[in-house]
Length: 198
Image (cartoon, rainbow, N blue to C red; front, side, top):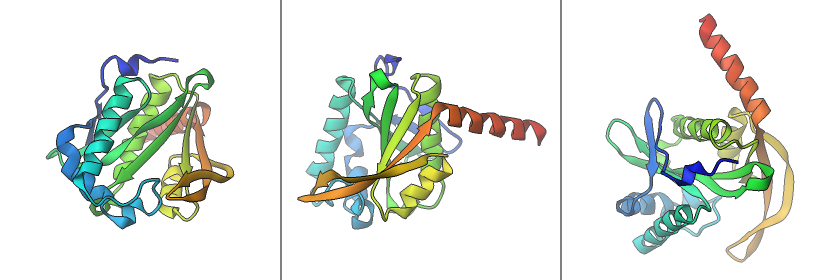
């Protein structure tokens, strides 16, 4: 398992996006994202009411990266640097070659393919540079948009983990969604060959 990701924060570039390390001056934009009840509806955080909550989350993300525990990218628009949301790894099982992802996107940028593009870059990094064999995501039942996003990326629904989550004084069921390196590699192969034929 490669932990070189923690030696220098990896900036990821896609056609429309730049994924970079989150910064404290992103707090206002992150607050606007998490102050929206539609964004937090299926999230394990309460809807934000103070900008200090966003500052605390950013501080936690930066510290977690410094301690080699997680990595979270700020998703920004290439054309103007506008902050759109975040995504990244919320935890690892290094000895199992496995990592878990999480993500959120400000509502004005929903249904534009932003998170598909961002997660495609993160997954490619996971399988080509981090030597992961498995990428997982936990999704609440009813979060159709997130489930559809992951299915589009070839994640498989491996079943319902009953009451495996707990926040806001309630237990929550969660679907285990997972993508294996072998399935991703097959998808990448056909994508490459399709482009070669076109």
